[in-house]
Every structure is written in structure tokens, then in C-alpha cells.
Image (cartoon, rainbow, N blue to C red; front, side, top):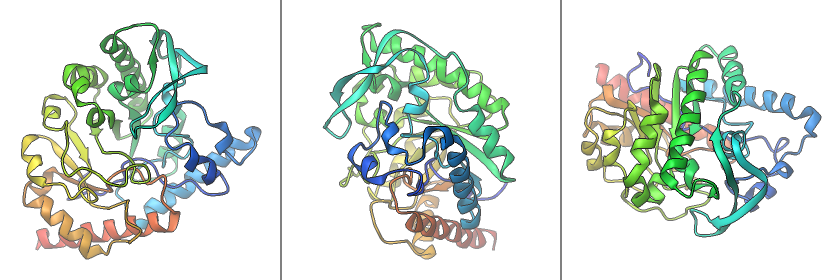
Length: 344
């Protein structure tokens, strides 16, 4: 990902400012699948400019914290997935369906009423803005095709795999345009592979590899147990992880700090780089650099440094901004401690 040993990055999101979003509305509608315009505090005719300004804040915070590979903080998104999912043809965004969400609660989801197609670039301007406003290496995130297929009501295909494969084609087209716009790393978010491992075992990797097809840049797949704000108690092991050895992404991103993951699982992903979660986002405590360094050392007991990327467990969207910044700074300083040890 970079010539730096043990490069640091973020999973994707960073806290949106309180002047931009209504956190009370967001708390009542965690991880929306449909539009949630009411979360924005800024009038629509000024929203893009406000989002640009807030994105600059996120970029500068990551730079000041010492992060090596940064994102746009996903500031323009209501959730990690709905910005892309709702921009596709074949999706009825005005008349949602109700289904069971990942946290076991009923949630609104878009209805798929026609063939899924990408009709325009969705995140290209986001990448152009990010690349123009930092000299560091950059990363952008996209929802993965399996996860997209689990966050919609299929009223057209009547075949989950067929729908996921069309989502994969749309994601692939977008990813190629994002690389052409200058981003260094593309990450595909696939949390529903962990949530629904049976479906993931049937067609998840097949759809993911279709989304990855022909991509010339560096690629990451993120799998997690869910945001700490949503999932308080996390299992200590993944239900779907070793299967990702068969995907064509170069890096697998996992949570490890909050769930206290047994890092022996990393041995089931030979040849992959690992983006290791070393920040517990469920804890109000801001880790010390030494705490982070010890979590990195635990990863190094399983993998060589050349295969390790340092990151938070998951996205930081729901954290107070001072806490998120403090944790990122501790992460960067902890990685620097271990880097100095390795370089003697």
C-alpha cells in the first residue's frame, strides 16, 4: 500500500461534524439503507459545499494524526452503502420494503424492481476532491456486491445470486472509474459476509471476484461484526473469513481489538496482506501508543511486517470527533514505535 513499513490507514468513515448532521436523527436510524435526508442540518442548496468543507476537516485531521493512507471520511454519505446503492437503475428508492436488519431489528430497504445497472459515476467527484486536497496516498470505499444484495428486497430477479452478480458488475464499473480518477486503494465493504455466512459460502466470493475483475490498483475487502455503536458484544471469531483466501483482493481488513480476536485465524489467509484492527471503537478509552504497539506486535507474531497494515477495527462515523482523533494519533504513534523496533 505504501513504501512505509506498517502503514496506517482508516477503515473508511470519520465523524461528521455536529453542524453538518443531526446526531439524534442518526442515532435513531443507524446505518440507513434508504435515503435519510433529515439527518442533514444544512439546506440542500448549500449541502454540497458544506460537505466539501467537512471533508477537508476529515482529511486534515487524518493528516495531523499521522495516518499514511487516508480517505475522504465518507462525510457525504448517510451510510457506508446507501450513497452508491441508491444511485443504480433498477432500484425503487421511493417505496421501500421492510426487512430484518443485521442487528435483528426491522429496517427499511430499497426494492429491486428491475435490472441493476450503473448509469453514471457515483463517487468519482469524491475521489477527485480527495486526491486534489492531500499529498498522501488515498483510499476510497465501496459497498461490496454480496452486502448490497443483502440490503435490498429482491422483487425482480427472485434469485439472490443473479442479483448479486449484477451488483458486482455495477461495482466493478465504478471501481475502474475511481482508479482512473487517481485513487490509490479501493476497499470493498462486505460486513454481511460475516452476518450471513451460508449465503456468502454459496456465491459471496464469486460475486466479489466479479467486482474485482480487471482492477489494476490495490484492493481491500473489509469484513466486520458491525459498528460498535450498533453491536456492543462482538463474537471472538469470524464465521466467514478463511474463504476469502480465494478472492482476488490483495488485502483483507478485519476487526481484532474489540472482539479480542484469536490471531491464529490469520494463518488461514496465506498470501494476503492483513489490515489489522488495533483500535477498540466500543471503548471510550483513547488507547495509548504503547497499547496500540502491543496489538501490532501480536499481529507480527503471526505475520511478517510486510504483510501488515494498521487500522481501526471499523469505521469511526459514530464516535465523538475528539475521541476519534485521539485514537488515530495513538495508532500512528504506536505504529511508529514498532517501526523503530523493527528497523533497529
